[in-house]
Image (cartoon, rainbow, N blue to C red):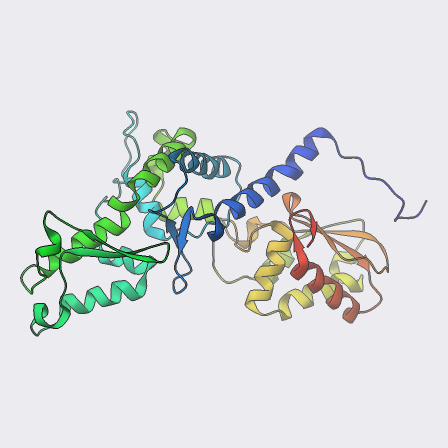
Length: 343
């Protein structure tokens, strides 16, 4: 029986481990799909935020919070493009727990123009210009105390205070206007979505241990690190299975070709390959040295494509006859794969 006919039997425990990470990744990809309307995206910042005009129920956001909490509990990095201020807002609203105190203070719940700039930089830039303008603000900007929002293609004006539609923005009150505008966009308008999301998250990740983390550390646990990939470090800590003794040092040509192709790829190609192998294009919070990629031999030269098992951070390679053959099959597999197979 040759290598193509061999059968690998997975134990129930291995099957659970194999499916768990992939399940998280596919579920989150579906939940955060813009087509579903749960979150809105900004093309400039590439971040998403809660959709205040969604038709979905609050229960949906509670479950999303639970999923993010479970992902942290299971050490699974997710492709969640929430802006950094969302994690500060999350920790600032954490339930109060009694127990051992820490030196870390609770993040401020106040949202500022700099927070809006993370999500919608163009709008924040316009509001900053309003704050810095030296001329006649009322005459030049012609603004009232209303927020202008887009609700499924329909422009809607929402008063930011009582009788806001009849209160002009002037040089003396423009700071108040910007503060109310930011608070409405990032807090008031999304309270129906954020509150259940928060409850769902803290139903899994609540407790005194949460006070040990800063917002950026929670973001690292959820999203991983976006630092540039150090392929040399990934190669140094990689493990190998099914190859002859000593082939990790370069005796097996296909291993050498694989790491050369990884290194030669553009930054976007490198992240695509990392996502193909691990299910995420980001590094773990502890850096490249904590990400162990396993390179497995699948057999002799063949027309088949490389395989990946994302839950094990494993890529399986055949002994292709030349580097060009590996190049074609590897990048085809990377670019055409989705979920448990090819598109």
